[in-house]
Amino acid sequence: MPKSTHKYTNREVTIVWKPDTCIHSTLCWKGLNEVFNPKKRPWIEPNGAKTEQIIEQVRKCPSGALSFYMNDAEDAEKE
Image 1: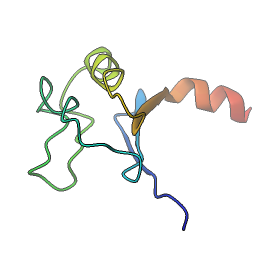
Image 2 (image 1 turned 180 degrees about the vertical axis):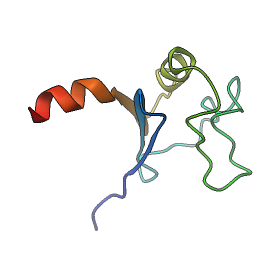
Image 3 (image 1 turned 90 degrees about the vertical axis):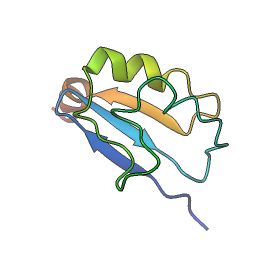
């Protein structure tokens, strides 16, 4: 069965979430609940904080279930 992938963007950065990889460490939402809130649907709100804050929080994910890419980098690859 293929793993699902979800993407959320604030136009600068895209947050990639792979729920099948998640180990539920809760590090994502502890400290940046404005973006990562498991009580809401969708649980990721990429407009809830500055891009730099989002990147810093995503980097704390121990499982790799959360990752990110800068949208301008993806656009450059397409060209």
